[in-house]
Amino acid sequence: MKNVHSMNTGSAVQAEADRLADFVLFTQRSCILNLSGELSKGNVSFPQFFLMAYLSSEEYLTMSDIAKKMGHSTAAATGLVDRLEKLEYVERIHAAEDRRKIMVRITQKGVELVSRMRREISADLATMLANMDQEEADTVEATRRAMGTLPQG
Image 1 (spheres, rainbow, N blue to C red):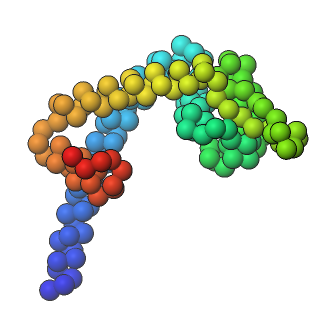
Image 2: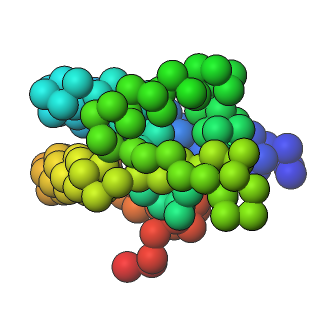
């Protein structure tokens, strides 16, 4: 009997996961389209934007930290930082204890871009959530609770 219950629970979980995957794909497509249009105005690529998003939540990152977070080589990370530095979205600073150590931090201009994009993504998601049917809303709510990523409402 235990195996039947596990299979039923497993298929229910899979069904919820499938519905959530559809929601993620839909929201991602919508958000990415808006993000793409906005970022192209400032000549910023998605990897550059994602790097700025990482930097906006940290005081600074070293080049090796950036390479690790982005899944790139240090040389590729340096190229990302070079382009963002030219656009004045990030800056390099030397560590006080070791001037050879280069740290990268986001500038106010970069913070403003990330904040604006986050607000736009949030507004897009709010619109999508408001237009969900009850089954979709239940799936998102159950997933939110299971993941524990947002406060319980």
